[in-house]
Image (tube, rainbow, N blue to C red; front, side, top):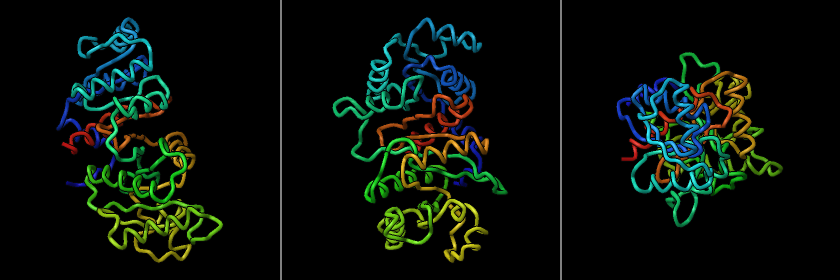
Length: 306
């Protein structure tokens, strides 16, 4: 399979497997509803919409969408809606979970519930997919983890890396290049993340991390631009050619991801890997178009796991 080059290709490829059902707790979010409507019209997904029925019906009609195209469940309490959405997924009645207007923490509490959630035993981590700000021809870039794990250590970083590699395999990347980001390129005891970056690269070189190439430590410029790597005397042949950017902390991932959206003006899609089904936690301020892309990414992830 040819690798995905642009985010619009996510939608094109997802149509071949759709439509699926996306569960949306607290679905009154205007952008989440607009994304589900667009997904239905593009043949990707229909909605299992949980929230205040009257408000949902009203907002769907404002979007010129017949509410009968979607299943609407009246549950105006946000936390109960999240728990019910997870229950319906466990029953096989939906294949992915999209955050509505509730906070990410409330959604993840339902996902991570030990008795009734969507745990698999693997770590959960967010993989954001966007487009390289300057590459010609266009190509996609992943960022992980800016949404779930706050301060991962070496063991957690390895799992986060492997989750991202699985996502990129589903996007057609046979051996994605993962750059382990740090502030500097030379390991130093004063910056523990640099030592962990080197350790991850060494694990991959020994074959302990499979299905990818790992380079690090690298700063952002010499992870994405070969000329920047050459200017700093970095001789690794894959420096500057990263497909996935593994960040050291959630703050770094969150800031970098938002820079792609709000400074570079690039489209973005998110998926949480590691649960029973794809969990989609785009920011509540993200555009409906971005949430549509997340649904497409989730559908591809769900289909490839069959």
